[in-house]
Length: 112
Image (tube, rainbow, N blue to C red; front, side, top):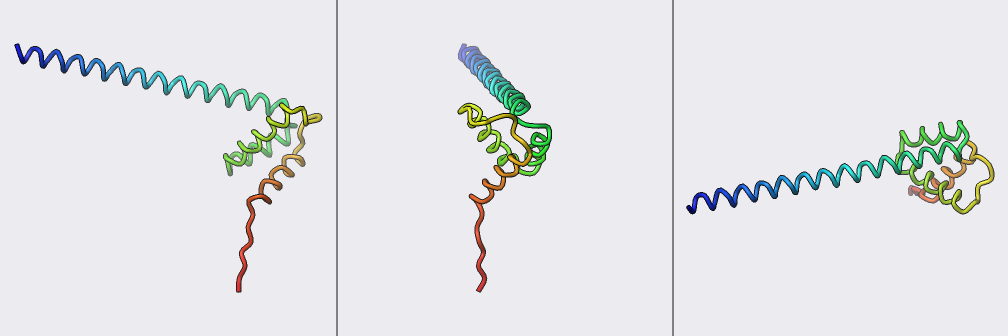
């Protein structure tokens, strides 16, 4: 009888483990789906806010430095939400935003 009880307990533990793994996978899939939806929303908003040249510039930046591109996107989204954008953002304006961001993080090396 003890062996049967042990076997039943092991089965229940294995079932619980499988259920936990399945639940974890579902949560990961849901999170991934939410991220994809968010990215799609940002992409659609960038189409509305940016000229073709500006979008190309931002995509090129994204290839080199994804974090910087995301910062620019977030900044543009904030400006749009505050109604501080008049018309579509041009490539020159994207360049200016990027330059302003670079100026904030620049540093000087002094040699003796």
